[in-house]
Image (cartoon, rainbow, N blue to C red; front, side, top):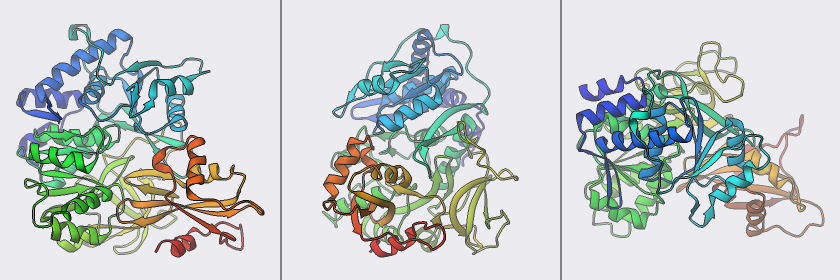
Length: 512
């Protein structure tokens, strides 16, 4: 990390980081969307006016504000305005629906909820009314797609100075049907973004891109990179490769990616004209959040002529390890990269005893980028302060991490965690289903795909995938969680003691 970025990375709060960058390069671009550009100075000035408008509505330091907004300049301004006030913000992914949104609002006790109105044919304002009906203190709903509150910054109190206070609640699905609220501080998110920027060897001459939802924990993670190094990123409100490629070319994007699904999309587009560089300025694809088959790495390097670095992160710890552009091809293809300075990775047995290099065990983590725990839930840390991840892997003598599986029963599809139990619980209500198991299967474009394996009730008509997904939609399941594969079996494989379903056998049978 260069000296300027290192100094900025010492910022205690997001707002301090914004002010320092705005003072250094006020006229340089921060975010670009279509024909609109937000400079670093504009971010500081406009976010402070939005903060004053929110303050006039009653938002105070510590006020919980939920927001479910698409990836837009306005969304970034709202988020950083909340950071200026010192509010507690809880972003919600835009495609989450009644079940997840209602849970997040209830558990966080949000006092305000910012929505885009009707977006992509779905009425978020109406959903907000549905999921908050009957609450003793429903949140004030604010439509904030293209119009934000405005006010005089002179009315604001001083900005927050404590970077270790919990001011962010992100939602992730785990082994249970309900999401978990992950508690972050300004410092933990700044630490994650600083580590990512350092690993990727970025510079002020780069041009990045955000093809993922800004409401994802990667939103502030990526923003920190931009603020540290003073380079811009191109935003996509709704990502499609056909629309994105012209924008990548127009703005000279040098760094793109997101996850395995994005790598596959870039490859597919490149293969339409193999002899012509898809994006002439592109030098690096980078991402994480889902398994990466080694063949994807080799195909990107061979066919696109750019480097690919992949990492390991989660909502609880946005940046754990990252491949570096100067790693060996073997390490870039076969591992998740190395942890940065300050991130401790410990591989343990089931009793928490540390295991030697090359031995598979549970991955545990300690460092400044690690979250503070979960909202209203037991501590996820062991007695030494390491986060218990439930992931399985080993560390090579070089320090590179290799992931080999997961103890917790989640599926990672396009970088998003999906709870198998949530879908299984809904399937159990279907009149034609006797029992069901939901598994993740390897998928070159998605990382993993969702497969439902069903025992049918005796005498029931044969289920079809369209019928099953229509039912789950009707039950309020989000679209990104719908199964893409349905298998009907006479009996699910079970062990002989507690009759637990042996999902590994299902993965072996249907994963081809």
